[in-house]
Image (cartoon, rainbow, N blue to C red):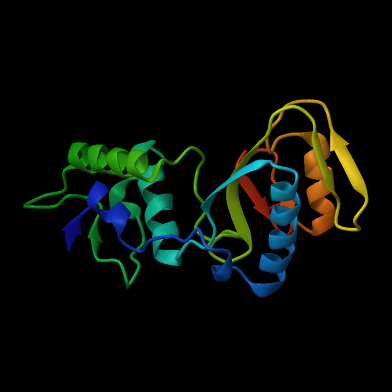
Length: 183
């Protein structure tokens, strides 16, 4: 087994491709993104599909790094041969916590990662959205909408309502996260 640490972040890479999402959500998201781009909004996709192994690594490193679980109590995952305890002759809790913290920073984790999420189910996207001035775009029915108030980001209430017409639902507590059901 290999000790935990930031070298694990490159393994089991996530995706930023809409092609890796379930077809129904990918289609609705593409339509929403087309409306945003037509309106000249800036969109950056940070994540779509997250393999279960990646989610597992992210989940447990965050918990260890934040003192929420003893590394010895992390359940095994057959496809991931990781030593969370940093055992040589005996477990090394300080090294384990330090390595988990480095992993968490390397993953750029800002919120506690779930083991199973809409990302592992191919039903979510993390993206940032921004624009200047008023944003004029059409909702899913083709009705023109103008957003003249701030914030000029994905946290804008009007934008969230327009996205909902496409079937792209915002999780307000997680700024970049959108999915097919808001989770």
